[in-house]
Image (cartoon, rainbow, N blue to C red):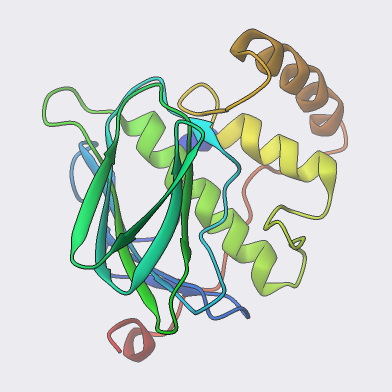
Length: 208
């Protein structure tokens, strides 16, 4: 099976980790026939959405601030934004996900959508990536940077779930594919899986 198609979460389900970070699936590649992934994040004070600066060759990506105040990076520059507001990340533009700069919970929607052709691999890969991070977070196996503590596991998950729909801001794309490809081959030989299924919140918690 294509690793970008093994996400487990369904529309309306939520995930939480010990830091208090919570994500709810508003729309999924399955519910939108491959056209839309929309996730609502609840970020406690002092916490952030985890992701190194990166870019998507296809775009755009919309971030809608519903409650609270956020910092974020766009094309290497830091910005702040207060609810209610939104910003758009154009295709192939480096960006860092929002972090909470206020005293209250930050509530933000992350939207990746294509009104024309379905983009199932990009959307499914992003959903699977975040589900895997939550799974390792629930086990206490994420670093302070929000990466899987096992370096090889982290790179395997990035390679299988995100490439070529996403690339980190540096080094160049070709170098990333070569490096990750080599590491992927070594890690695969150990029998590791790129995806780890998380524990989803019970329905009453998801609707709270």
